[in-house]
Image (tube, rainbow, N blue to C red; front, side):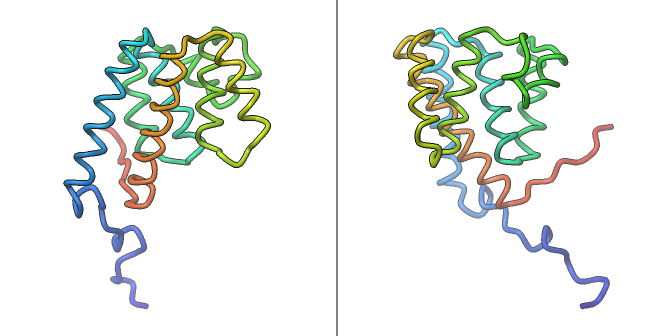
Length: 160
């Protein structure tokens, strides 16, 4: 292989660009979910915490970049964002946020059987039915966007 041959990232297809109709449908779904979340009384900060936690689990650098900015814009603190990956070991998240994060993790890792039941039960204790549904939809849609970005290897470049 010559030194001028493209690397693996150069050979990736940006599937959002390759199949724009499918991507646009995903964007419309995300917009609908955002409205569902707002209608259920979930503030933008919680939505972004869920987006970030799911993106951490999935290792999606692009979505982490995008949703960190969105979380800061929504009023999140650097302390809370910095400890999000270890949220269970902190005291900085409310019971509703903890329930939403656990439910988002259960949605992201579907093979975890008993953990799903515990996360769902905990969520039902502190979130309304509309909020439970919204959190699951948020996790479902960010999981889809994570797959698009991870498989396309969307780049994250240094900011100026």
